[in-house]
Length: 538
Image 1 (tube, rainbow, N blue to C red):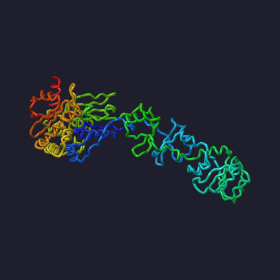
Image 2: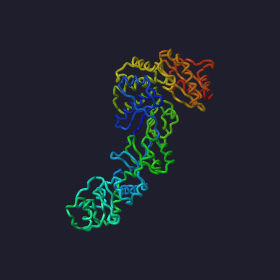
Image 3: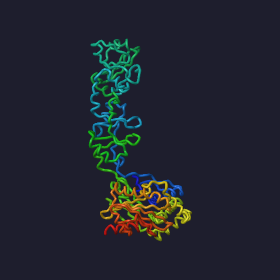
Image 4: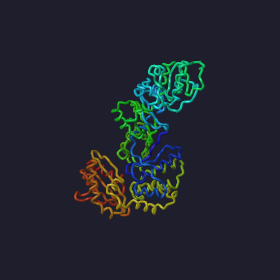
């Protein structure tokens, strides 16, 4: 069963992280174990405080959803081993599509590839030392000739001598050694001729013959029903393929490689079929261009967002199966129907907690604690205009389960993420940054919740420089930073960019002013985004 990843937006906040964990838990309580909570970025200090307080680990980090080799339906490949004979290997190649097969070690790890063209030169016995040179096991010959060992035992598992015909001995006056092999028709003179060296003798054309063998002969004697010509041909097939395996410039793919990379490599390769291995090198199958037609798309559930530019890289190539959100509906398009649940509430975790209720699933103390943390964070302890009576009802229920005082725990949670003196300016801005498109204008809006205004203004110049630099590098027309303090009771608005006039018109900022403080403004979604959208249309 395919994994289904649950995750929030980039630069995740407490709602994104805790929502993914809580929804994963709900799915598993309902009997679905293939749902996996994930995150698209680092966990901020506020969220980490909540996770550590309720003894939970952050979800896995997901870098992208681009289809990879692991998403393909691989061809279950036939493989060869270095010890396989020519005959065995040829049979494997012929039994499948293609002219080559992967070669693996005894643990099924890829070590090379062998093709018909690599094998053909060895199909004939081109030299007397061929079997010795290729480290051919003696038993390969016995098996290939369907031979019977009549006498003796070969001195080594691997053939150590040359292979001769009787004509070689007679015509060239060759002296054999004990390690050599002689192939001949049976006659009485052969044993006498070889008695001095006790070489291995293969008597051919001996079907149903009872050989009269002198038991005093010191070598090995075999008999086969094949004739000499057939025997020579067959033992040529018995050599192992070890030395024929191509190991240099081996072209293969690893399961984590993207389909885009695979396509590019295939276009520049002379091969048509390629081995596939996992990260440890174990063979998983083979692929060709035809395998790229049907890709098993990765499956995803989006929580706390539904805009593609706020989501993971590769979301266009994934299958979105659910959306659970409390923001405006934006530009997510899907090929097939999906479960889409969005409610005008202050927090995604409020929706998820309601789903626990609807399914009569008990909520544990830990899960209640992190969902409560998300509601406190997103509603700024119920001060945000996005907060509803339903958020408050669910928060009270969760606080009872988690056994915490909402006000006391809430202040500790928010202040845990408020210190900024140890963070880099770009980290501060990107911690909770979202991208928007207002007509023809590309806009970035970041928000930080802090009680450390003194620390912020110590790095004010650096913050402004980074915002200007981001506008240039990422082509933002407008960059807005919200510095929100629930104790002071409002938000300082900073804005830069060639379309700064949008922010000026939206919030009555004078051109000469660096920013403006907006009392009782806490919500990006409800109090900042709508104002900027309207101003951009003027």
